[in-house]
Figure 1: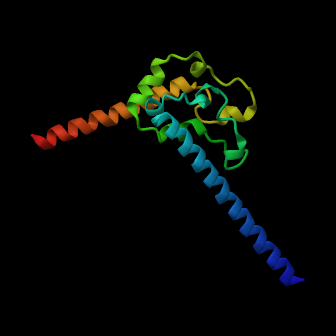
Figure 2: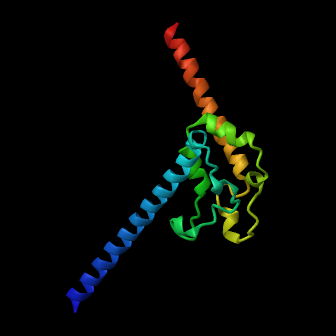
Figure 3: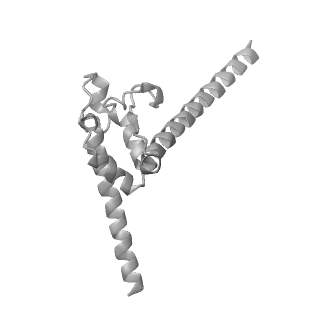
Length: 145
């Protein structure tokens, strides 16, 4: 009986760990695919349609658990590094990018960036990349002088 119990506990722990890593792998794939669609927007001229989903963050499947929601949009945008693609998407001035999630669930109150639209987050990421680009230019100018 003890052996059965020990084996059962071990299997449960192993499977739970595997499930977490599988969830993390799926999250990584989602982030990569969606950030690539933004980074390659100008190359393929394909609109990343997920930008029009104001409640995109509300996908509990990718959260670590229901009490720890994460901002999928923020994770995706952190991987975006194409400033020209961001400028082009922002210039579209798509009203759907500017809409905000209005599901009203309590969990949304503690979710990071839920009060911001995709448009707001695109602007924030563009400004971050501009600062990095500017500091890189300043650093290189000082190195050459």
